[in-house]
Picture (tube, rainbow, N blue to C red):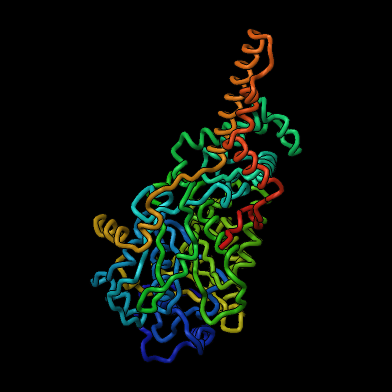
Length: 527
């Protein structure tokens, strides 16, 4: 039975038996998000509403479909309703067109027609929003992470290191942790690797085991190239506190956090991995809450295929574990991509809510992807291959988890129209919203505290001073033929100086201290 079509009837009429059976699967008793109306037999049946139970939003989901089929509008629709029900939302804005969620939408003939088709009482509404930008590149409150908290596994993905190099980078982090060399920004990590590959540091390199000079050199070159591309702005302090994403607006609605990525969309490895850091940091810090009446946060992970491309086995295992366990902390994650095959099977199996927009089937590879997508759905009364290539923009095939946790019947759906602006707000409005935020003064200005770079630079300066002093003392001794004068040699004076003792004391108190790390190798924040 086909389900797409242009019809707009279905109000006040008895539903066909098959359509009534599907609709019954979405008749939830508790609070739910309204997605749209059922498509059946070429008609849109406004009396058959397709919904997602609010408590099931932390069971994760997938929004998929070809470019231009309406995925972004679906994210906007879901985010609006979550915010209206007091659930904070995180959205990654890849193309720069999601900022409109903060402003009321614009009425028009198309919106009115869509609302009439699906039985929606459309009302132009803006939603409370905060805007962020990675490292402050673009318009938004800067989001930064320290190198220490980012950890070796995620950083290896950004640097495109192989598995051996990833393990070696882990040893370097281990060394820095033990020696109390704080890794806040890229120059800190580069300083540690440079030290370990120097004549003075090579004995230390041997002591941490399994790290060759050649591999350390590869890592150093990767870091140098990465920094030369202007990536240093993303790492440093003040580090962003991801609990900011969990806030509510004064009127009780959930805040929509929009991470503006349009200015870094040419750096896909970076922003996709940074999104994973945000999610991992939330996972590390949030307490276990089990099943809740509504999520604490719903996190939309756009362009998800970029995260998985070229990922190491350890990285994929860490993603799978994070997604599986973060549900019990009240966080739902929706991956947004073109086809389900972009997401590894172990992750896909944890995504209980599915909104599948149209797929193209122009090539043999497209046909394979279509058949693979159909196999991921429960048995259906529809010819899904026909439906998925025939539905229009703003229509999708839906199956979600019911209030009891069981999959609902597959439903071809005409989706509701978002009530906020479907497009970006003006640049001046966006800039004003960023600067008016209470968070702007907290995160706008970068801070450069003493860390590994400064400590190792001071250590090198002390060593150079000591060598010069020793050389001078040797010359003096050779010239006078007598020992050092009453106050001790210059070397002894340097070694006995307050600065040198302070440095040794700082290094010594840190030996044996290692930062507690999570499943991703990210540092756990101590609050």
